[in-house]
Length: 138
Image: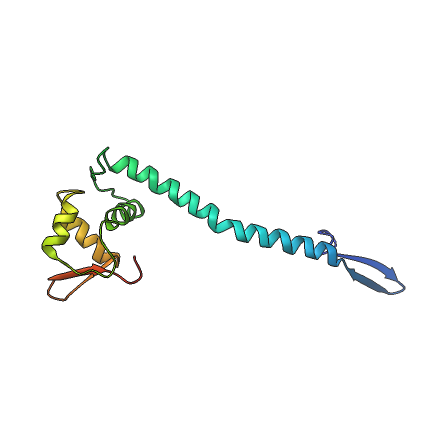
């Protein structure tokens, strides 16, 4: 295989084969792999952004209100991340404040609140009186 991709060449000498490494070709291949790896996250982010935009177009109206909740988990998470942007990091919210903010997006504030907790986007006190953004952001 290494001769096929031109990394080495082989020549017969008596009963032996002598192999030579083509360092220039190795450097070219390494550079090519490095370039591909460096651009992959950006391409994935663009694909993710396009997916998010498509989901938001499908499940929100012109005013940005959530018209319905997607059944598919991946799409529901996009909706949750969208609504989560209305909250400030480091601030604690009462359940009433959370509901007031979420009501701007959809009247079913409980589904959004539960989604935030279930997907570890928000945390809450055991008694449910205080909510805040999770450290990891979901």
